[in-house]
Image (cartoon, rainbow, N blue to C red; front, top):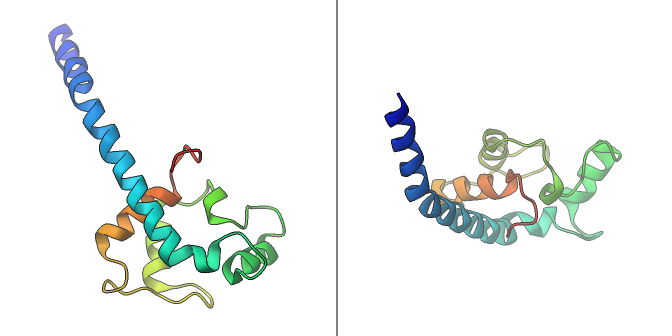
Length: 116
């Protein structure tokens, strides 16, 4: 059992940098998708319809800016993007690929909001 723990620790030490780099790359891609697809409606500013609607809906109980939210899950983000919600349009796979959607969901739901 002790040997198994040592092997698992060694494997984690070996693969951790690659996993972290992959995560960072995913977040960078997700941010690019967010800026291109989501920010026109869900960015900062009075003319951003998505942010304005969420301010009205939540009345300060939750952040109106998606980039400040901590309660969203990747599944919820993906469902909203693919199916739309309220007046929000749905985005087809030809507009946001599955890989882009995965990266976007990772970016919006990241725990460390100071990254990308």
